[in-house]
Length: 118
Image 1 (cartoon, one colour):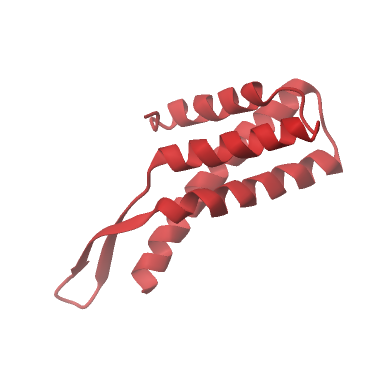
Image 2: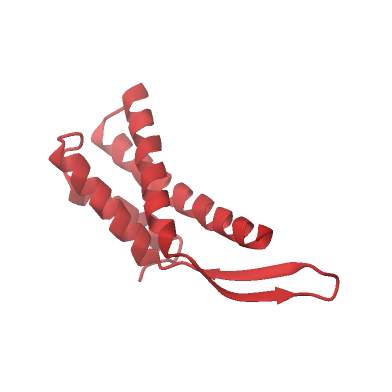
């Protein structure tokens, strides 16, 4: 269970960093700054990561000779994209951002940099 938790934590950190990078770029390029933007970014990031991690699954487990447990976890990047897109469109409907597609494009760029485009 600990190995699974650590694997999921690793995926969550990667997803959070990727989403935060995209959001930071969006807010910097849109000229939006301040405490409200920071709070919005943190809130969006948390929600997206929580939604998208539901698709992560354990593919394999291995126990080595010394009792160490290794877990291979897969994560469909599509889940991150879908959750990010839904959150972006929700923000656009609430008029908290001007254009959801621009925000979605930033995530695509971040995923391309990480070599994670599907």
